Length: 136
Image 1 (cartoon, rainbow, N blue to C red):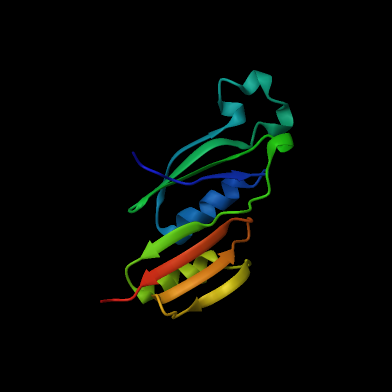
Image 2: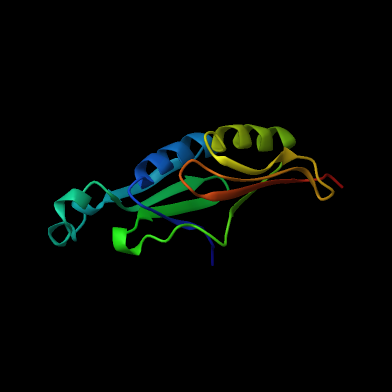
């Protein structure tokens, strides 16, 4: 079994995943809009460009998402996507890129458990944590 986050968006999934691809150094392996899907004839025309499913593959796993039908979009709450990295430099690089235009909850810093740790909500409303453990 593999666990991977599946994120819901309200019309900006494509922009979010293009941003995540750049920030996380991954590759979008699959992307389909509602208009490209077998459900196209059952989807209102104004929703055809919304993302039905996208998968971003990274070295450490996959991040998936979609634009939820507008009536079913939940505002993200009660979770964070947690990134665990090997070096403080990697933590700093990802934090600097991913937190652009976001809301910082805890800036990247050393803590009693981590060489670097941060919490923020990105510009698309997704909550993130970055953790780089201390070397033993």
